[in-house]
Image 1 (cartoon, helix red, strand yellow):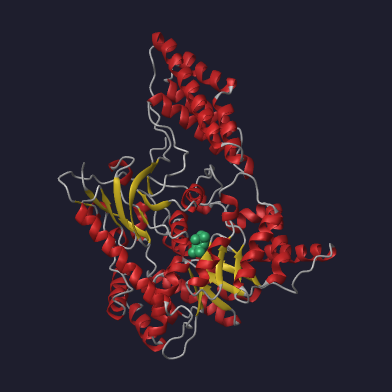
Image 2 (image 1 turned 180 degrees about the vertical axis):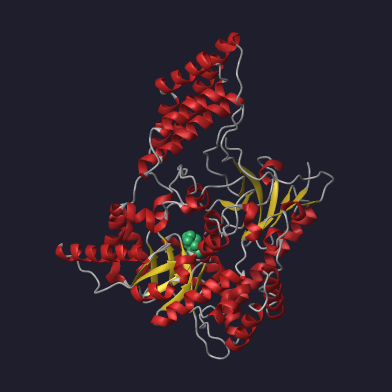
Length: 610
Ligand code: PEP
Ligand code: MG
């Protein structure tokens, strides 16, 4: 067996050693050719067998699941696979247009799917249709259809890519020890989720999924991005030593968790946490989080088929507020769309990151917004709740959302429900337009939080989920720093607080730059709190300002990055990592190394979706 070392993007800290659990989420490859007229009968027989096999597989999986919503989805898939109109449509294409069976299946199912349209929840049934046609095509070409089984203990998921909703299910069971993906980047939601659930992860690792088989031994280091396929005993010892060292470092940092994040010269900043699930609150408190700076409520929607009820929203919010006591809790209204879609749904928008996501989606579906806001008002007396609106790009969106929030309060008062006098309403600055007009937006809201994951995506025109452009994702780009500066100035002009809850806030390497830029609250994944707090407590604002001024005198992002990282590594050698892999601009080919004699080719650049 080939021993291979891959270098991907470190996405969630920690070392994991376990057995490969492959998860194949790629669309089926569709061979397309015309058959000879005399092949029609055998082609139709092939088609019928693949349909029958698909129905049988779905029946078997369904039986293994028992009662519940997952079973219902499988029943629906089985009926789609067996739908006489669709199957007959495919047969007709084979007979009349002499298409091979795979092509005929893809075309008939695609036509059925297009009839559902492009918008709203109904359109999302299209993802089910795609999944069913993929299954039949997989059976035709003799590939294993998508697995739906849950991983065994000690599994390390190895996959081309993992949709966020499936990651939510697979990673939250507590069985998975690690995650390796060929695709993806550090700020994709799957990576964010892995960090939240403390599952070590390496993303964008090239061809990992093609180089290993189920059950192979695999080791990964989520701090360095290193992945070893079939490691030797010495390598395992090295990984275990790294794991022990990381644990030791963590324990030493945790001893300061309850101390304030105040610089040597007296600048106090808030260190808050980002969460996806209420179950993370104990971890927030254990790591010294002083508040929740971002609760991504869309995760209430992701691992299920039906919409969460007002009661479910209420229970989640009330429990977080209660556990956080008098600490502030920022609840973000749902940010669906982009790479966050409910289980089994694929976006059918041509460009989801620029599509109907976040506040745009909510304003288009006022009923969803209403359910969520009603629950927030009901929970508003339980603690220090704040509402945050995602991806506001224009003041009109803010006004419309605020008007609805106030109208819903009146509605509850009429119903005799006890609600708070007011809830502070803030916005996320995630588009360059918002950052540049922050002075005006600040007049109409109570606080800002900069979402650098999206702000960088939109200002540098880089898809945050795309490994191939991940090396261009540079938080220290002069353009990004100037947008942050503009956002801070806007906040200051109206005296409102400005936080940052993008991943940039949780990286100790950027802490002095952000301190000098004037960020009041740093909100991050709970596990990132101790190192960032250590940097703030060891630093002086004066030194941070000098560092920023010198950094911003350079022109290229390479120069700024080199300068800041060198300075930060000099000050905090234990906390600031060497840049690695594509994060430092290397190509995948440069980053991939092999230990054995087998060469590892440069990965392809996209999916094989037809
Ligand atoms: C961001 O964009 O920086 C952010 C915090 O929001 P999300 O990652 O959920 O898009
Ligand atoms: Mg965002």
